[in-house]
Image (cartoon, rainbow over all chains, first blue to last red; front, side, top):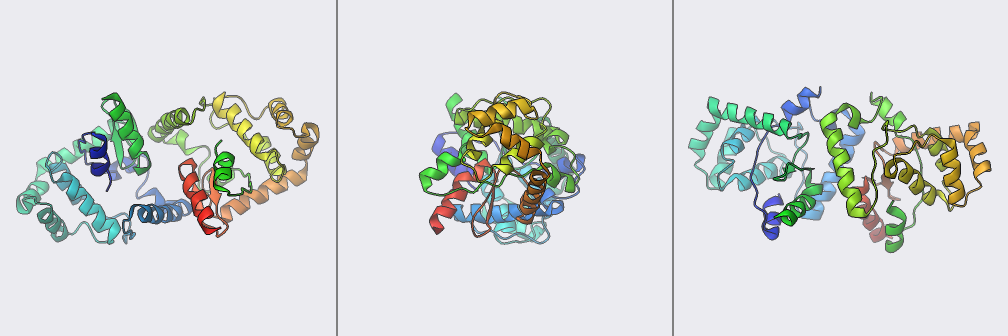
Length: 180
Length: 180
């Protein structure tokens, strides 16, 4: 929700790299979010999200079930990763899932979001269902793994330095703006 | 390393509750730190610690092996939890383990730290080895679990609200100072 505004303030340009966390979790033996099978940590993380969202002035609703099926949303984001609308699309999908608790596997919802952010919804959806989009997303997951990514959001500086989570957003951007 | 200085600035008083994380990890099936069996996350956390320590002006050395055997140090801290020296003792133990990479199961090292922080080392060590100290630490672990604690450091507000990790120290203290 914050990266485009904060990076603009610091004069840092962003290259979006949408990927799926599920396949990375699966490789370390996790069939769902760790928040689901470590209940004490899971309860805490929900409370932490509530508090952080309140600080940022954002609504928060844990979707049911959590996590949602994000495959199509990720294929669309991956297809649109170099488009001007990728940031707005990403924010709208997260707002739908975690602000309103909506089902983001719903193709109608994703089409409405695409129209809202000025994307050619019909064409993008058709492309997101095509084999090339599936290959692209698979390649994006492999690239994330190669970069040592194990969670989302993650930020990678041009020198390969990795920063994980909203808590490290400012530190990541400062590290990059100092080296520019 | 920071809590006593930051809490003093905000006028918040601290009650120390030393406990062991190992038994809590074991109950969720972990025989060591998760940083050891999730290598990508483990590598990242070491790098994150290096960066955070640099920001705070603290040395960082990952002890070998990690984690160290902290049972005696925890019994001493638990025995001294209401003493004026508990904060200084805790900082010195963490500085020995993570600043200098020393073996904190070494009773000579712990005795030297106790003397350094003005504690009656011989008496405290004798008490830390007694059955009552073992019972006290077991009770402290049980209390931590009851409070929903799954990691360290954790901060619990008088209303039971839980905050986890150095990243949430300021937020925890602000939450408490606002309700005072």
